[in-house]
Length: 538
Image (tube, rainbow, N blue to C red; front, side, top):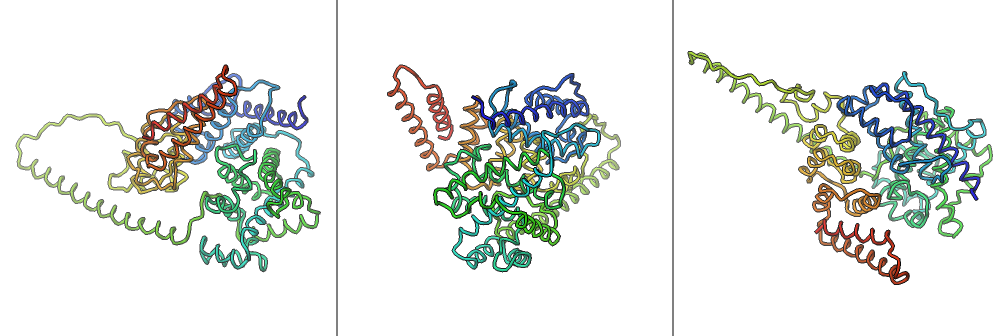
């Protein structure tokens, strides 16, 4: 028998699909693609790929929709994730919580696309939106913020120990700002939401203090890594919180997303509280009276007036001030080197021109050169003496890590190479989508600059992601093998993968012993996948 919760979830999901179909019928004509009716997300993604081919690049698609380079990349990434979770859907079938969240996240981005492009007018409302829903959202937002604040606070023995830790992690300037904006004796109250969230999802902080609270929970499984899922959710919450604090009415999609994020984030903490593993009680935080709610809102608005909108994304790791400074130093030396090379280039070109004129005066019969038409691109037309960073700036791409990741994900080899030439570091996990799409030129470019890969211990994540992709039917391509060989060939990594292969074999043997007449195809596939990865590493 279908539960009421499943019926409600299915209804929301099917409404999201209806919104996506309507939106596709308005978006695709702007991209020179004609469609008589909207279909499933997989079809929509295929049509966008056709538009990219017809227009020449994702940048051209972005221009038609008035989106930036990073925005079109995020748009296609959300749609790709949705169509992977829901390759096909028939009305009435079961819907998982992850499928609903993926659909809501894409519909939420459709709201941004509509705001950017005035020619779009589709509706994104998925349910009734009344004052009661807005009040519920405020309670959930307050509970989420206080829940994570409580987790961080209780991870340290005293406030002075926490302040000392924060000085080490963020620097004295940030600590002074938080003490100024916060309540006496409570430094965390002076933080922006993104900074508080970073204290939880930072790789080291999460592993040291919070991983045990979430590791056995079924929630936070939208992405392969629970920590990364939590980071993604909290960054979305940050944007919703900005609107809420500015007293903007949240859309029905934002309300549904916040509700889902609250349930996913608080369930494991509530279970830990019930088991006595933490003193933070989400249920008590949610059950706030009107006075407590208004007090929290007033404090949040006061902080907003002092610090402005929280525009900082919830990052992956905390960057210590000394590391940030050392990252800036090579930039200036690199610029100086580039200027020296440019000066040398100008001198060489000048000498060549002078020599050509001298020869033309001496020679009676000028040589006739064959003119070969050259294929010019935007980048070719830029002066050769410009640095890679200047070329990026001239085509409207800021020198930011997010833009490099976007270029990798869409397979833009030219932009990736410019980022590499300009000295930008990269991480292996940026390549997950590109490896799935087999964007060979862009990926080979990254391999040429493997020394600029600065992700700590990328192999565990790479193996997990690759195992899941192969389990979903994707192949172990030559490029995936090359990435494994390049970054996962250390003896300890190979040993760990061999142990994983042996565990998969033991699970298969145990299955065969229990049911010798039946071969478990899932266990057999797991052995084949782990063996293929192991062979590629060696």
